[in-house]
Every structure is written in C-alpha cells, then in structure tokens.
Image 1 (cartoon, rainbow, N blue to C red):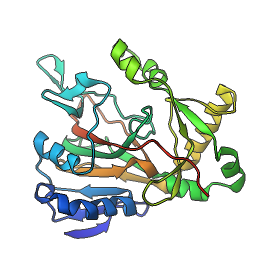
Image 2 (image 1 turned 120 degrees about the vertical axis):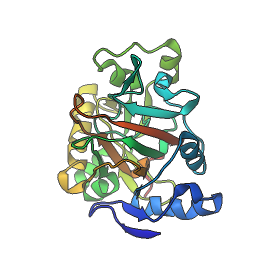
Image 3 (image 1 turned 180 degrees about the horizontal axis):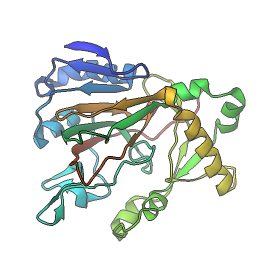
Image 4 (image 1 turned 60 degrees about the vertical axis):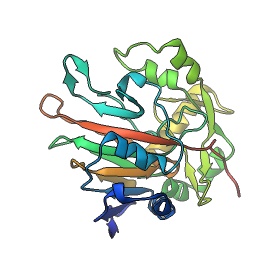
Length: 281
C-alpha cells in the first residue's frame, strides 16, 4: 500500500489496495487510519454489492436507511444515490446528501462510518465536500465554546424531509422510526476523546435552553464558522473510488452537477454508531 495525504485539510489516500483482500485481522489498522485522518480514499476498486457489504460489516452493524424505496433490490442496507431512471423507475435517490450534515444525525445512534462507492460520476461537478469539525471546535473563540458546552441541538428528520419539494409523504412506520432527537452540540469522540462541533442544516429544529429561532440562528452561525473554505476538503470523484469517513468529526455535503448531461450513481452503506456523548473536561 502507498499512503499519501488526500488534502491539506484532512484525509489519507491509500493506493495499491484491493479492499476485497482485507480480512477481519486488517480491520484495526484501517480503523486507526480513519480515526487519525477522518477520511480514507481508496481509488481503483471494482466492487459488487456483496463486496461492499462484506467490507462494511467488518466495521460494525450495517444500518438501514429510512427511505428503503431507494435501496438496491435485495440489499436493504445498500442505499443508492443516483439520477438514473431505468424503465421509468428511479434507480436511486437523486437529491439525497445535499446540504452540510452528518449521516443519520436524526437517529438515537447516528452513523459512525460511511462508505460511499462510485460507479458513475459526472465529468464536471458532483464533488463531495468535507469539513473538519474537530478543527472547528479547536478554533472556536472561548466565549462561543462556553455558550455551547452542555447544550443540546434538536435534530428533526420530519423538519428536513418536510422541506423537500415534491417528496412522497413519509409512511407512518417511517415517521415512527424518526422522532425528534436531542444530541450534544459539543461531541466527544468515543475512541480519540477529541471534541468536535456536532452540527446540521435544515434538520436542526432548535437548541436546549433557547427559543427555537435563536437556537436555529446559533447553529447556522456555527455551521458557517465550521465550513469556512480553509477547513474544506473537496473530493472529486472518479469511477471506482471508495471513500470511507468517520462522521464523528466531520460534516459533508454533495455538490450539484448538470443532471441533463451527466449520470451520477453511487452506492452507500453505513455503520451504526453509539449514542453521542457530550463535553468532558
């Protein structure tokens, strides 16, 4: 394997590796790479659905996305991001992932690790951006740190989903699975012990101890601070790229592309994390 920085911000690039060759004995070293670098980029893969799920299952319990209608048939743990339409049926979800977020932050146990594998990507646009929320916490002015320590944000899948234009209404089962949930704004990583800002966009409905509109405004300010350009790594996709990241110290967002000219299809699988823990001196 050849290791090199993926960007000046964060991330590591691993070349000369076929992840199909990894075994459970290799998992600790790979997890160490994730915890040290937050993002691992492995180019040049040739993975089928079973390969991707086997790789993901080495890291923990595979999650089921709320919107099961956009999973690959026969693979409920494999979510498809795509603007392709085959025989009149969307191959996947064309609009998921836009806007700064961490995966499944609206769940009691949000995603720990995400694996995203590129099958088809646009020639122009369609990058995924990442920002380091541990670095953002470290750089936050002390008066801001004092303001948010011990506070919780209310994450609401219903709020986020309700803002989507033309989306099919959630089923009763989907609504029951996604009640609003409180998570600490200052999150402590369960392995490294580092603190980060745990933020979101439209899914954030308020902050504990504040009027909803004030809490939302505070989270918007923190989000703008965390996503300053100097903290952003922009991954430009190529077919065969496998990108794995640790959601517990990052935010990410998809970026737009010309959907009338280009096709974008990626497979995503996610590993369930723990209940987020807050500030610890």
